[in-house]
Image (cartoon, rainbow, N blue to C red; front, top):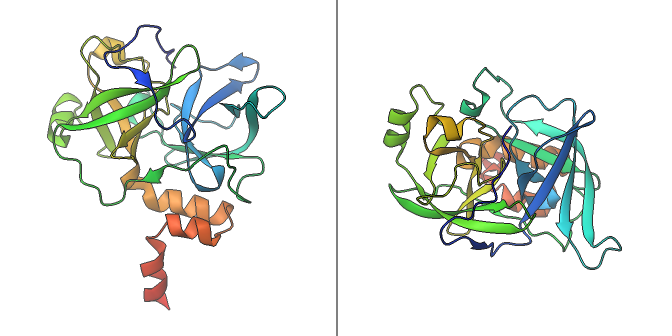
Length: 249
């Protein structure tokens, strides 16, 4: 697992979505893992990324909050759901997508956090300009301008890559380790991808990878519906269930 870097990137600035991402702090046994970023979903579920099995990992989400006695909004994670657990030697090549269920989530949304909207049928043209939202070494949420590369270019660079992955190009001189694992790829106010945990990005000198959320919307919907108790608020987010329900009934 990689650590982020203190080096700044061109046009780096504070994120405009301060309530839509959280800092994720985890331990595996007594070992503290590198921090990662998480995107807020409905009912305060969190979308992030790990590069391997999570059975022995314990996490918390952390957010600055002046109304709390400690100055931070902190919630323990009671369950981690993994989209694809067929990890291999090069785990960074596997689409990394995990949903965190904080204690107390699924009951009501917390005003401290605001959910990101998921990409649905949004098409990403070649050279699409987007932003990556990630925490820096000072635990401040920042955004970095990036370019989404074409699927053809991505396939040429990564032979046999799972098509759920997206290639992103960081600004010239911006270290590939700058975005944390789980950082959100946002285009036109929609969460488009989740940045993979890639410890080899500096070695392979290739674009950073992100898992495409559009390809796993049904899985995300299933988790939110089952563990968010399928409230009307949640069901509006996973609107693809409505046509299926009408068809079956």
